[in-house]
Length: 75
Image 1 (tube, rainbow, N blue to C red):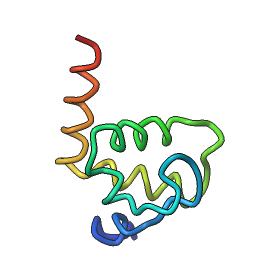
Image 2 (image 1 turned 45 degrees about the vertical axis):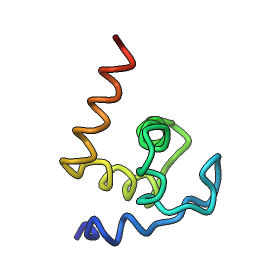
Image 3 (image 1 turned 30 degrees about the vertical axis):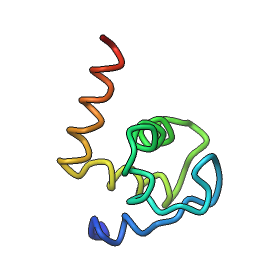
Image 4 (image 1 turned 135 degrees about the vertical axis):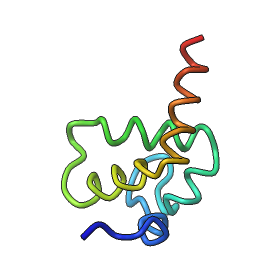
């Protein structure tokens, strides 16, 4: 069973530029959302953390925001 979005949002990153921050807090900024999208594409990120971040980013509102940001970046 996939954890709820609110449960996933409380997961804290143990490394990187957003170390110690919860996914919900990271996702409050465009830079943070793009970082999370980049992070799940990294081959070295594995296991539960990758699965949890991927599930978090699949929330329709978050997925739409990432698509918007990527589209803006391409223009």
